[in-house]
Amino acid sequence: KYNGGLKPRFEMWKCAIDVGNRNVLFGSGFGTTQKLLNDCYLSLGFNSYAESNYQTHNQYINNYARGGILGVVTLLLIYLYSLFIAIN
Image (cartoon, rainbow, N blue to C red; front, side):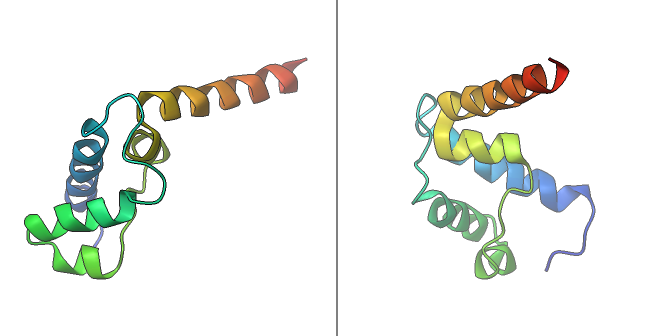
């Protein structure tokens, strides 16, 4: 069971990166990521993570898992555009 701290997060992030690495450019897709994360959690013995459908708790890694490099670049462009608009 998740009790806080960094170790569980590192495990979640490892699974998310593994899921994203299946298709580095486009990611695993927005409809299948949670199932792939749950499969990874189960393979590592983290049954409670899978039962609770834990997300990555990291927006950048989550976007990588779902949308690959293009997803992360798109997210960063949105942030940069918003910053540019706010400054001007």
